[in-house]
Length: 116
Length: 109
Image 1 (cartoon, rainbow over the protein chains, first blue to last red):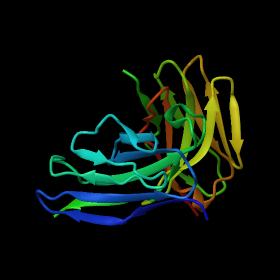
Image 2: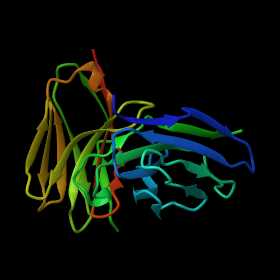
Image 3: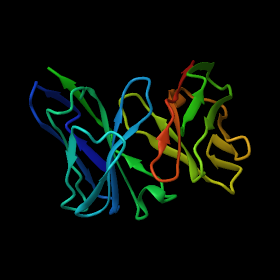
Image 4: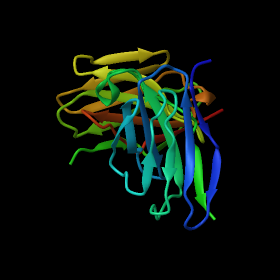
């Protein structure tokens, strides 16, 4: 079945450590996104990519980095510069047209990141 | 400031009853209005996407309405089921979507 796979489901980070969250999709979607979800807040956009080898910062990109070397993959690295990384991270994808598109976004089931 | 506000924050209903969730947006210019269902610990699932010209859109027992004049949208759930227990999120945007904080619905047997 087509879909988006995020791994791991739970992740723990030590102080000063970088961690990478995986996001893979087999929907043949051009656009991919990373969101952060905190209790009592709406989803906030971290980074998005509309095509391979290109990506743009969202509203809260500081302390995060991404790469888009393959159409299917859009990993997110939470760096030590992100001082409050504890959150639920969601990856999404959509057909060509990216954020302006009227196509639905398909979400993965998230990675919950916590600080040790 | 572009915002999306949802009400109520939480709602409890009995199985088989109907309910309506509200979404007010101040985002301008309008692009499209989306409703998602999010089960606990899972990613959101798209329910409906409404463009400016659409007043009503249905997906099974879910019916979304849009009033572009008042900048309000509602999601009506008919004959609720236990599986409808979830958070319902609306989002709007022209370039980058703005998400509401959601309405947490609990359906009791």
